[in-house]
Image 1 (spheres, rainbow, N blue to C red):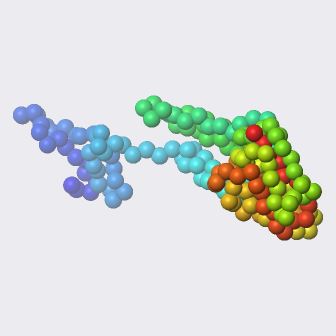
Image 2: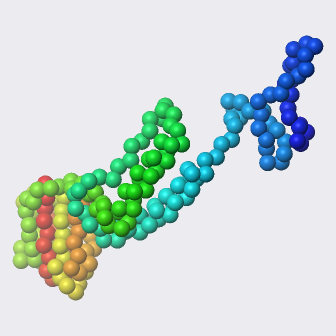
Image 3: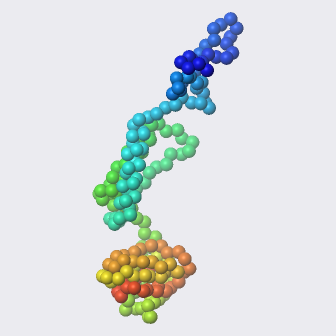
Length: 200
C-alpha cells in the first residue's frame, strides 16, 4: 500500500485496465478498501456537540436530584427507546436528545418537577411519640411502605424499620418502600418527637 495512491482491483478483466476499488483515506495519507467489515467512517459534528452538552447536563441533573426536589405529580420524564432492529437517522437522534435536553433543563431549574411514583398511596395508620412504649411503636400490620417525619427541631432520629436503621435529620421527612424482614414494630432513638405513617 503506497501513501497517496489509490488501490486498484486485484482481479481485473483480461486485457482491461484494473479499476479502482471503493476506498477511503486514512490519517497517514494511505487508502484502505471500504466494505461491510470496514465501512466508510462518518462523523456528525451536531450529534457530537449535543452529546457533549448532554454530558454536562447529566452532571447538573445528578446534583439537582441529590438536593431537595419539588415532587408534585405532574408528569413523567420519559425517553422512547429505539428497537434494536430499527435503523435511525442522525435527525432522529438529535430530536430525541433535544427532547431529553429540554426535560433535564426543567428538572435543573425547577420548572418541571421530578416525577415520583408512590408505591403506597393510602394512609392506614399513623403513630407518634405518644404511642411509643419504651421507644417502640407497634402497628397493627407489617410495614411495607412508611413515612417518617422527625418533628424534633434539634436531634436526628434513628428509626429501625424491618431491620434497617433509617437516619432522619431534625425537622426532615422520609418516605420509602421498605424491604428487609417484615415487622409491625418501629424502634426509635435520638428523636423526642416524630410522626410515623404506615401506607398500603
